[in-house]
Image (cartoon, rainbow, N blue to C red; front, side, top):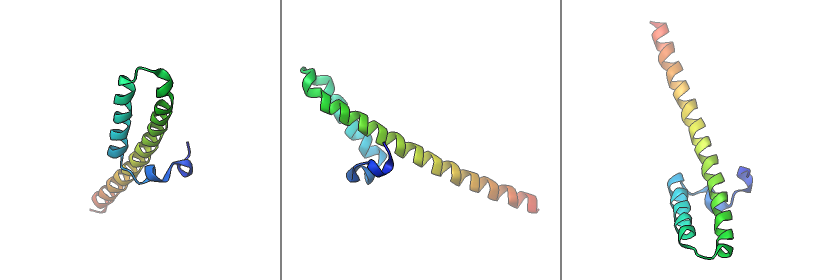
Length: 81
């Protein structure tokens, strides 16, 4: 699922909010007796999982880039001395 295809309400939610929503769906799936009723919930859970994964990777990439910049900044200060 591409970022542009994500529902707008999920784009503004934090990872914590999305995870909480996924956990709620999981709890409802665990208590559901009729599997026919759980298909939509399961599909929604899969979509949420993809959204969480994309947000996690995006955040991880940002953190890595910031860390590299800080390391390069520290290294350049040491080399200047």
